[in-house]
Image (cartoon, rainbow, N blue to C red; front, top):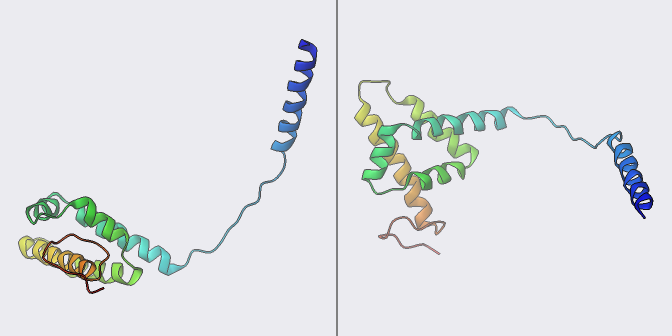
Amino acid sequence: MMRKFNRFVASVLIVCTAGLGLPLPAQAGLVGTQEVMASAQRSEIQRYLDRQEVRDQLQAMGIDAALVEARVAALSDEEARTLAERLNALPAGGDGVGAVVGALLVIFVILLITDLLGWTKVFPFTRTIK
């Protein structure tokens, strides 16, 4: 009885070992410049949102930071490019309060538009247009 079991296990191991030598199918494709740029722009926006003063300001406005991150992830490539350009155009240092307020205003407008379109329900004072 034990001999039959050992033969069975050995047979299974032989088949498995032989299967390891078979090549697996692989797919490769070119990654376009637009895809790389969109990824870089999204990471730039995410770095901005990771700043503590931005998170504090969002919290003061009653907006959940996780919701903003989810919305940024859902932006189209064109919207991400536009937002990243606006963030890059902000002055470095100096007028930090104005920069934060400007960025928060952009985020507020994006949240407001998505509320009006009925995609989300963040603000209680909006009604969907559907």
